Length: 496
Image (tube, rainbow, N blue to C red; front, side, top):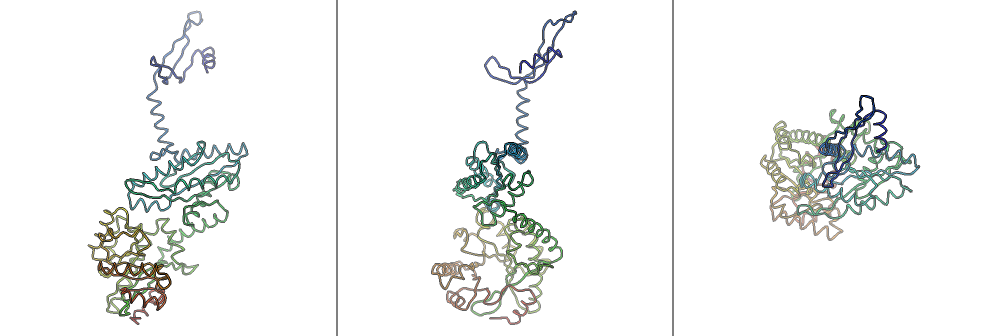
């Protein structure tokens, strides 16, 4: 280094650049030094001058700017930009050394639900804890980055064998799925991991990131808490989902999504008293598409909010027509997705729909699940109270399958509990299911709540529910969900 400085001075008469210097206290600090040669009249070197400036503050600013550019401010992990640089560099090294590389895409399961119920501050603290656990589960030479939201990546370079990626993924999962205490809440994080391999799956940044992302969504689709290697057929499935998303958006514009109605009967009188509206997709090519094939995609893409509002409005219009035609009050039950329930626009949208359709508020029941209301209690309570103040009814759907809390239930202004079909299905053969159903019905009576049993499929189940004094029932014993034209025939019959 110093030899290069003198070479520059001897050939050009000057040198400038950054070097480290030492203060009297012994502290090392950076300076910018300019050296010049001073000649006499004969052209001989007489002496050298040096002018330096302390650039400590400039260096600190540069470091801060670099940290902002390449570091995630929350977790202090490398961000997307630095991840991009490192993966490209690692790919070059692997190609030169003929070694393997694995790219892991990690995504927290049900993180949005945690964020919505416990708040973003809680969610941020959970992300910090998860980031630390991932770092501790891999080698110091591996890159752990946060891509944004609840998505992380891990680059495992210079691997002697591809199977090591599975060992690392297993180690990460074991580390993550341990309880963590945050703000007096105990929560167990859950994770899905997708893995793509160099050179097996691809040799470029774009291919490996896309394939790891696809594999991660397959792991998530299998219930989470696991990992998947990328397989070529996954790419075909991913393209199918992308096409489906685009078709869904077009389908909403062209009214392909319609409500089907499943009747609800009063168990004592056998009279048809209401119905539950359920979304169906009348696809112009593929015919009737059931909710299991499009609702998860709609929820993942955020399309569920527009879809839910469309089904809500169509249902109100249709049931209003029936009420006028049959001179009978009917109550309509509509499911709310988590996104809809947590939307700041929900109250205004519900009021506007009731006003535009002329549907009476007291005949409307909005169904929400237990998991949607447990968490940020004050915010949830405010949302529920505003809905009740609008004059409509509230039901807890799939009751008994979530985070049941009697203390919370007492505070929430709900009108109805809906017994999940899993309990109804086993009520005749499983003692525990029968005990749970009996307890829910007894509790509903004590709290003066209406209770509806879902999934009634045979007369034996119906008779037992009648003996237990359940109020209302729905299920295939009476009718599967049907389009409006078929539901009119049920209304004409009126009772079962």
